[in-house]
Length: 203
Image 1 (cartoon, rainbow, N blue to C red):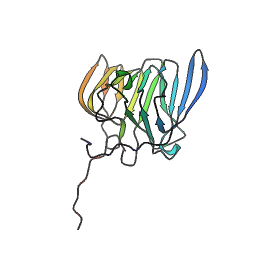
Image 2: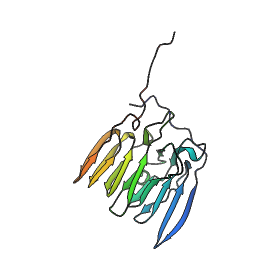
Image 3: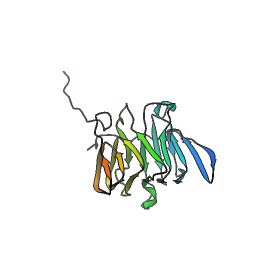
Image 4: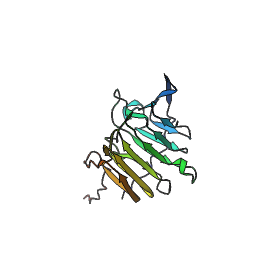
């Protein structure tokens, strides 16, 4: 599935704007673009705001070129002043598990993200390099609402739910691990899933 889809082109640099929230916590506002091994590891009390596709000319693509992304309980949200959704593309530079994507929520925070709504990558929320073997791990606890396709063609996708969580709309991975002691909803919708390839004859 999705083998026909070209890898997103490397965009211009994204930006990270930091605001001190006190008590050792930080708010990060990110714009779509290239992040070469420089995304922060975030934790409980931090806030991460992803600006959407309308923010700049990078098409809503967050291209993580090494370093991965790790969240242990931060609040992650979409910028309400922009539109169009996002796609996070993870391109590990080595074999270390630290270069994967690991998002873990807790009752003190919330995670709300949704995929691009238009263009060739519409419906894809998280996409990992097809050759990469790093695991993609999403552990829902507290308020979790993720809409879109998770695409990790050569890796394990781990999904765990505690409480009630909406974690994605479609899973495409080499292997899949499901666990947890709550309810995980996979909210399949046409707008939240990757576009199917259409082959037609034109006279």
